[in-house]
Length: 304
Ligand SMILES: [Ca+2]
Image (tube, rainbow, N blue to C red; front, top):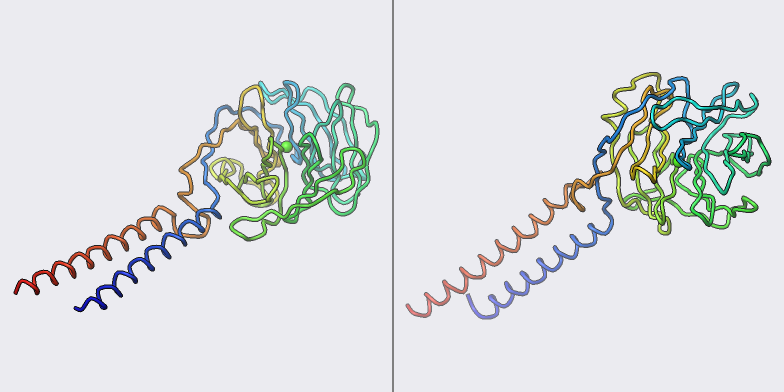
C-alpha cells in the first residue's frame, strides 16, 4: 500500500468517526430521560370520583371530579384519602382541571368555555372567566395560568383576564404530543399526564420539549375498569417532596417520586443510546486496528 492509499484510509477513519460522534450527540439532545415511579405512600381514593384535577394546597389535597350531573370540587385529607368537604357543581357543567391562585381555586369546565373561581375558605363560587375551546388541565406558574385542551398546545393565560398571552407546542423527539391532560407547574417545568396513556411527562416550560418521562403502568394495572377510568391527576406535595397521582375512579392514590433510570439511556422509539455509543466506540476500535495493522504490514514489507 502506497502513502496515498494510507492517507486515504486515515482520512476516511477521521470522517467516519467524527460523523458517527456528531450523530450521537445530536440524538442525545432530543432524548428525554426515562424515570421509574417509586411509590412512597398509598392512601384510599374515592372510587366514585372521576378525577379531573388535583392540587396540593396548604397541607390538604384539592380534587375536582367530572361528568355532567355529578361534577364536584372537594377537599381530601392526604393522611387517609377521606373527603373533608365537597361542593357539587351545577349539572350543566362538566368539571375539569383545577389550580390555586391566592385564596381561590380556578376550575376549568370541559366544553362550557367557562372557568369558575371558588373561594378556598368557604367553597363558594365567587367569579368566573370565559375562554374559547375545550378545557382539560390547568396549573398556575406564579405568572400565568397554563392550560391544556386535549391537543399538544399549552396556552399561557394572563392571570387577570384569562386571555392567552402565548402558546407552546409540546414535542417529544420532534413530534407533537397530543392529549395533554392534567397539569402541574413546578418552577420552569410542567408535569402532565397524557389522556388514555400511562405516561407522565416533564415538559420544559419555555421550549415545550419533553425532558423526562415515566410509566405509571404498574399502578394503572391495579385499577382495570372501563376504558375511561384512566390515569389522571398529579399534584406536587411540597411537605413530603413527592407527587400525588391517581386516576379516574381509582380506589387508591399514590405519593410517588421519579427516579432517573439513567441519563439519556433509553428512548421511546430509538435504540438505547448506550448501544449507539457502544457502536461508535466499536467503529473507532475496528478502524484504528485496521490502521495499525496497515502501518505494521508496511513496516514489515520495507524490512523485507
Ligand atoms: Ca395538578
